[in-house]
Length: 92
Image (spheres, rainbow, N blue to C red):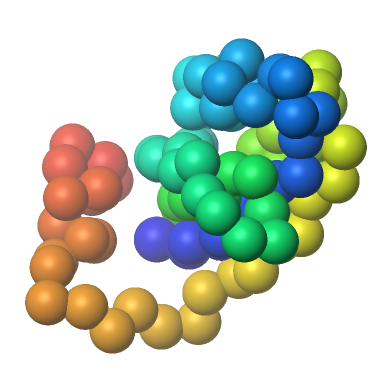
């Protein structure tokens, strides 16, 4: 499982609509409305690196109301939660 954290800057008046549209995209597991440098943070989880292009460049960046994004690809997860098990159910 490959995880990317996408920081999203959106048009202020459209943040809720942008969040919902991004959350509906295949490959996006969560979207958080946040305080700080970004308006939203999306967690993208895919099986292959090639899939990141499809999800982020192909669909996420084309959501109306998104002004800018910054993508961070995770190398390793340090967590007490078994995220891989939660996201691999039924996937081969």
